[in-house]
Amino acid sequence: MSYRKRTAALASAAALAGSAVLMAAPAARAEVVDVKYQCKTPIGDKSAVSPIDIKSVKSGSGYKITMSWQKGVSSSPVDLGKGAMKPSAVIQLGGAEKGTLKVTGAANQAVVPANTPIKINDLSGTYTPAKSGKVTFTAGVLTIIALGTTTTCTPTNSPGPSLSLDVTAAGGSGGGGTRSDSGSGASLPQTGPEDSAIALGTLGGTVLLAGAAGTLWVTRRRQAARH
Image (cartoon, rainbow, N blue to C red; front, side):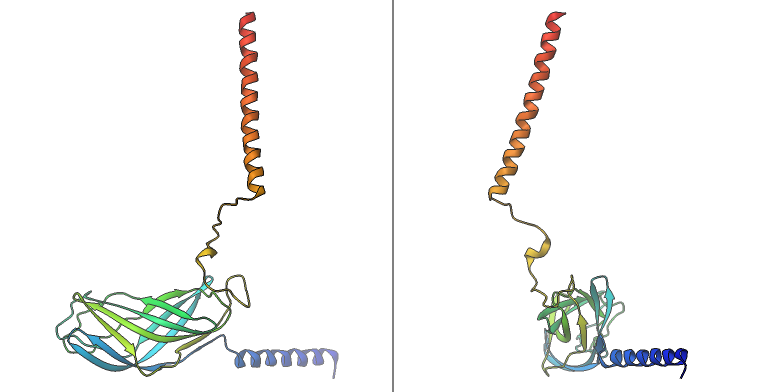
């Protein structure tokens, strides 16, 4: 086999191996999961099952996370006019990172007839990794505010994650620290010798300026007296 053919064969094998690695370890895995909700409504308890889809889109150092309902999960005894219903939800984080992500969306764009399943619009939020690794996203509590009332719908069937992401925390840290308010870049005043030296240096500069100004004033007074 010629050198050129051998090189081409090796390149093809490397490309196939790389493709196999990428296929074996996807950066994101999404799955539609059936979630059984138990809803506490102003007129009593209701239950419903809806397939939940959670997707991600890379956005800067984080991700835009979108949660979608394929079926309605509650109903109203009266018509809900346009803009009368405001939904929000939380997504449970698991794996490399624990906590919740709040997702929100627009109010209903059309009238919801009485006693019909309420279709929830897509809800979204921004997730910024605080730790590196595989993070899972699972449907949590859904809240519906309508006509001055609040309905909460809680998953009761321990649904599995609808999305898994391989993420890297800001700075590329493998261990990734926990989220902390002290990470904003602000620092507390120092009170050690360095601060004292800076203070004395500033004071010395002030005295020096005052001395120079005083010398200039005396010189001008003497010149004026001679004339």
